[in-house]
Length: 132
Picture 1 (cartoon, rainbow, N blue to C red):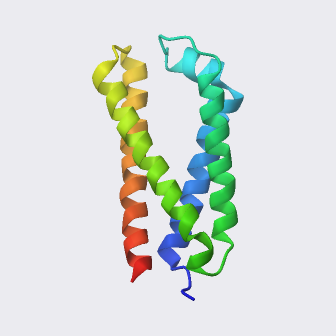
Picture 2 (picture 1 turned 60 degrees about the vertical axis):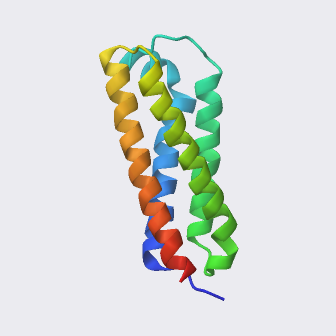
């Protein structure tokens, strides 16, 4: 069995932290964050809470995976998380390209997309290193 490398553990911890922060923003205070601060032009009270709940679950599972010892125990989750992050990058890129957004909402989406791309690159790097 292969031990989880230190960088992979740090990545899991960062994934958990990002998941919890964004879960709070999207699940607990979407009215303040989405409609107040970012001035999101489209009103959909359900989507942001669903997305926040998904991020909360991914944060929790990342935290659980952080405490595992063997790569084989977390490999499937890690691969699923990478695919999820890839889908978020694709959807966020389409959002930026296709929607007419106010400047603050656009900048928020751009910042989030850049952050998710960084997480994707870091995750792919860790996955490749873990594979040997």
